[in-house]
Image 1 (tube, rainbow, N blue to C red):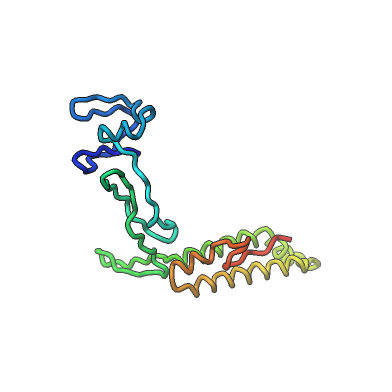
Image 2: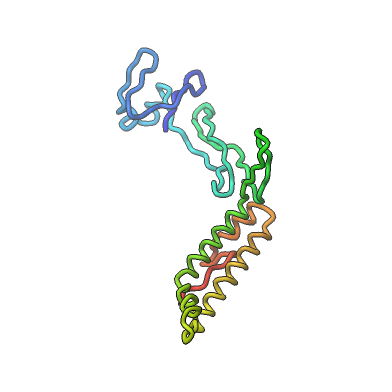
Length: 190
């Protein structure tokens, strides 16, 4: 990304797919690929340096739009301070007087856990269905144990999510260190 700097201020971002006119001079688009940075800077075109220091995971935070600044010799695109998404569900009354509920991160993460659990149990549901329809059939012990382990893991994960008091705590549950994460994992299918 490039910007045009005039009088120590960024006046526009530059489209590198076409040439550019600066004052009365027309420059071909080749200046963006063939010219050195020093040659471009001599006519007021600077490479943008991206500063992602304040950028946070969009799953957990709302980032600001990047801001372009010029510091005398460097054009920088940087983010402002990110705002944490709502951890808990919220309820508001809109302009029409209707109650609007919004799921917080905890609810969304618990729905994901329930969905994963459901997907794991679905593959063995036929055992349970057959056992209810065929008197002489019973669910194999390893399937019963597996299904109980999936439900226990789901409940444990949801409890850990519920216990979080900050977005950073919630995000930390999903961070793998040495091959595992604090949230835990579902058991392997048998």
